[in-house]
Length: 149
Image (cartoon, rainbow, N blue to C red; front, side, top):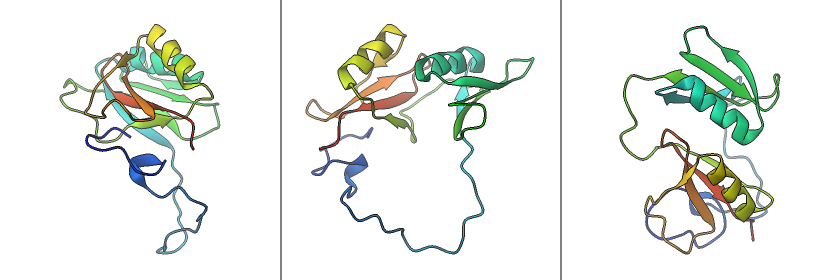
C-alpha cells in the first residue's frame, strides 16, 4: 500500500478488486515452485533479523558465524520466511517491494511497533488512507493495514 497519490476507491491492496471473484488467473501450467522467503538486504542482518523476529513473534532458523546471513520464519517448518543478508550499501530510496500486515487492532499494533523501535514514515500516502506506513530500524517500509470493509 505504499504509494503516492489517491487512495484506492475500493478496499484492497493498490486498488485491486477484492470482491468475491476468487478465480485463478490464466496459468502456464502447474507451478513447481514454493515461495520460501523474502530477502532483505541489511547493514546488520543479525540485529535487523532479531528486531523482526521479536516484532513478528517468529523464530530464528539460520544464522551464520560471520553475521552475514540471518533467517526467521513463523515456525521452523513454516514458510515463507524472511532472510536477512549483509549489504555494503545503505538504503537509498523507498522500497519497491514491502510487507503489509493486517492486525486485529491497528492502533494497538502501531503503538506496539513504535515502542519496539519502528517509525512512522510519509511516502506520499496522504492522511485519509486506512493503513499506516512504518519503517524498521534500517528504514525498510512496511504497512499496518486497517480492517477490510
